[in-house]
Amino acid sequence: MEKTKKLKNFDKKKQRRRKQKGITLIALVITIIVLLILAGVSIATLTGENGVLTKAGNAREQTKDAEEGERVKLAVATALSDNLGEGLTTDTLTDAIGKEFGEDKKGNLKGTGPWTYEGERKNYTIETTGKIKETGKIKETGKTEETGKTEETIGSLPSTEYTTPYLPSNKFSQKEETTLETGLVIQDNNGNSYVWIEVPKNIYNDETYNDNGYDKPSGAGDYENIESVLKRYLHGNTTIGYKDLWLSEEQHGFASSDKYNELKNKMLKSVYENGGFWIGQYEMGILDNPRTSSSGDSDLPTPVCKCRFAN
Image 1 (tube, one colour):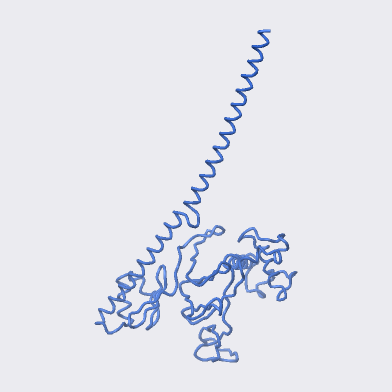
Image 2: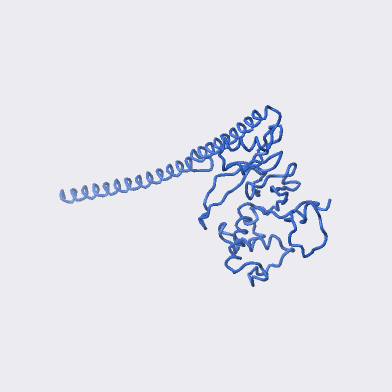
């Protein structure tokens, strides 16, 4: 009888130890989960869009922008001083730019008054009176994941959640008094004008255009599905079954299908990421001597693209 009682006590102790071990294991799992959550929060705090590292990087970029702007102001002040305060000249301004930024940067000054100085981070319009206007911001240069090639991304244009226009290079600037609502226009140093065509970024999540999710792009590199969504978005202006393929150099102007597809995919990626694209504004011709017919002349000036060219 006493032996049976001891066995029962032993079984109870054994069951109690098992329960204790089970509780300890659950506590360990919960602890790990909590630590993972905290780690995720910490990483997001550091690296998120509004994270500490992101804000620090933005502050560093803003400081670099401000430093360049101050150096441009100093160069202009030096040029005004050298010209005894009687306005700026191309020679004095070019010399001042060379002294401040280096002789190799003299070529970045364009025009004969007003002038455009193409900085490393921004473009600056400088009037003969010495007034300076920033006309475009160049963001940090980076490498694309797919090609590894270095590309410049230009910013500081009006944008929305669904479309983010960009300046193709530091030779472009926004045309004054143009907006997304009325038609955003940019122009280059030669007077070529381009208007922004919006293709909203949210169309790729719209089941109307992504075939109920079947053709929804997985990312900027999913060129086939991006193209499918764009065709449905333009329904009525394009043919869904049409295949945009390279056939010959004579027909497309590209030496091979690889080169053709490379540029086509680059275009699709840009439209997907930026929510639109630039297109030449309306008309093209010779700026100083508009023509309505062609000729065999081989020494014609380079044509430009402008709005209401004939006016």
